[in-house]
Length: 305
Image (cartoon, rainbow, N blue to C red; front, side):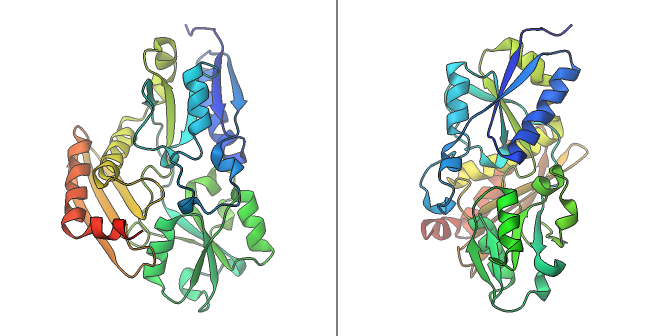
């Protein structure tokens, strides 16, 4: 029987963040727990108009939530895993990673145009240097520009004509029931996803056995292994989520296949590496892919950002 002591989930206040927190809440409630959600405004929310790569702050969308977790005002933090820096604060850990949603990036465009059909000079909005660099490598004739705000805000900017198209994560659109807005899915060979894209991180305090027991059934072992491989690549490269680094692991039976990409900001140079590995040792696979990227000059590219 579940411990009936109330569990407090910390979350950002955006529609997508609350959807994610509500998803976790519903699973815990089904297991017999009493659960509330506490919304917390993060640094990233307060910097609504600043281009993300220029902010100079790690963990823009999680810092205040982690502080609340460490202070004990919330018991569980739910994050988009791609926002979670590799270096977690001492005393916190990712206790569960649920099964990942679609990790691909997608195009949302006016008139549902495909990427290849956008006219030269079309304005394509993205919040990610990773997307900018890889999309720029696919088409050098487009104007790929920053766009900020939550998903609704970005879609509104598209509709009023500020942009001709947007590149966003498939998972966010689909979780909010906006999958019909997708004009095109990009394969991981076209635009390799961000580390952890499409996955959730359920973060708790180390040593909090009550909460660890509660969230343990939400963990999806294969997804967790894939995420560990991706984050290992990022760690080895010394990069953060705002650099043009991508890594995506596919799972089949007990095997992983990890693809890593590093691209120059303008997309003029792109290097990639792919390797197989075991779900039982994802960190070794991540390091192998990172070492291949480094041998091809990844460090020189990253130093130029």
